[in-house]
Length: 82
Image 1 (cartoon, rainbow, N blue to C red):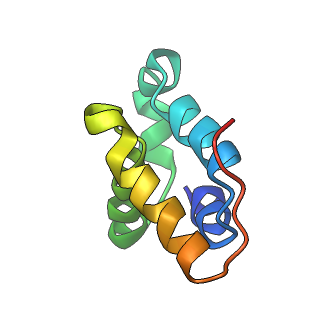
Image 2 (cartoon, rainbow, N blue to C red):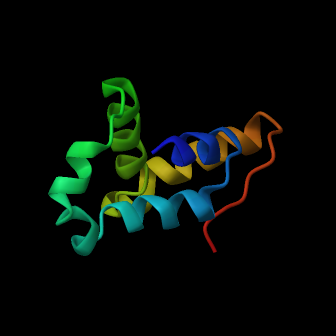
């Protein structure tokens, strides 16, 4: 989740998508005992859920497209989904 935060700061949407997808994979979600050992601040977990929402395919990835457009409008470099 901390890596996801860093990727979002870099506007690396391609890798951020890969990380969020991997973390939501069924085989990772089944590791409940392992999840209990990892201490993540509630704010980080909430922010990660925001990244999941960012890549929600509903509305043609509308949240992602808005975020990418904001980067372009502000002259910020970004790595888009390929």
